[in-house]
Length: 177
Image (cartoon, rainbow, N blue to C red; front, top):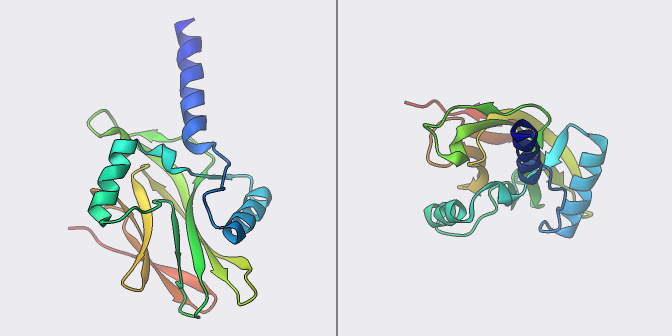
């Protein structure tokens, strides 16, 4: 019985973190584009910031000096004077337990993806780029200093900058010391 309950808890907790399909907190045009993408790409799922504990999220806000949506960014990434958006999505597959020495936000390495949608002058969005990553739930995307970047809060590991090239992007991985 204990094994059955333990298995049920693991399945439910994984579903709560990565199975949430509500994208209502996004802008309506972004919601539409993302829902279309998710319906065509069943291996990806919406990641809610509920993947992070509220206290931890407050620390993230304090560090950025503003509330951010860690898995969602909106800006003109490709400098065409039209707003674009990017999201971090979950991918199907097992998470890797890195051990109890890590905080809960850093303990599990999840299969994720950064997906960038370019906006057009008519208000629509087209998927322009996907980068599969493995990272803890303490990851984020942010647009600052005219650059879209991916990182892990409280870490220099996995930091990437997405540079626009034509209608797509290239990834510049930052080396850690």
